[in-house]
Length: 103
Image 1 (cartoon, rainbow, N blue to C red):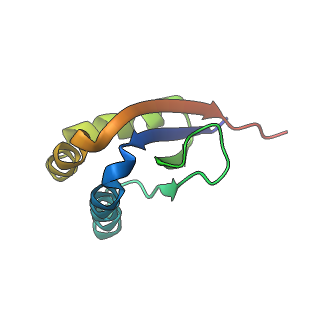
Image 2 (cartoon, one colour):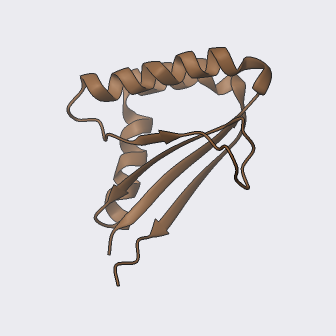
């Protein structure tokens, strides 16, 4: 059973440009480093989430692997440096886990 990890970040829409510039740096960091998980970024068009939301998600073989990625992010100096710059723009952050159904 695989697990989808979603990090749902609602940001201040008056700072969308700054927020997205920093998110682009996160994306560049993922692409530059082979040890980084390669997530998918999405922004709602029609959703229960407002349009000023960025969703990062990735699929993992199990829940333990998904938690390891969260630990990796919080322990990585480059990630933490970018996070500190982006944090003032957050209105809300949620971590979600989904069980992928393979019937």
